[in-house]
Image 1 (cartoon, rainbow, N blue to C red):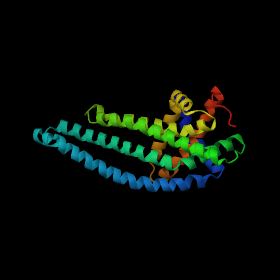
Image 2: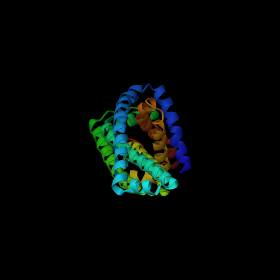
Image 3: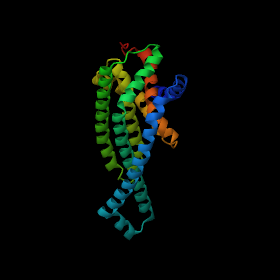
Length: 260
């Protein structure tokens, strides 16, 4: 898995050089700016709502009143840390929902960008097919919906686990890797569809190569640490990087069928 994570990391650097060389900026910046605006607005409201929910939960359960009565520094510290962990998990959960909505809305562009990347790599032009594009879009929506459902199930379980004082400290990290896997999964599936792999075959293949999905999603997350620029570049860079990262394993294992 470590080798695959490294391949996925390196693919982002390759993606930058690839985009620059082939002048794909219009396919990067247009959806990126839209994503950036929606991201800023939604995360602001998500963060505010999360704070209100945690405050309501503390009062409703009586924990805040109880801690004020016993006046224990250590318990107050763990309570504050648990609140922070809960807030982070909720933000990750909100972020995942936002991301999947954007994946569904941007599916036509992401499917086209992935196909264009592979066409350039292979040195051939794929004739435009509205029927095939529609098929790719429907598949992308289905995969995004499936991943959103399963991730939501796991995230809700982690949300409850984050309330536990000590165990809750590692939950945000677990949530990040879970989120990374499912996001990278959606990006890799565009290539699987083009090589005529069914959803079941795609699920099996990517589950056998979790490192590619995790690595793709982790870099996507870290790009959000760079305000504005990272938010603009992250979505489309992830698509191109996912497409490029499939090729080392394709040559090594010969699992993917040649595109027709």
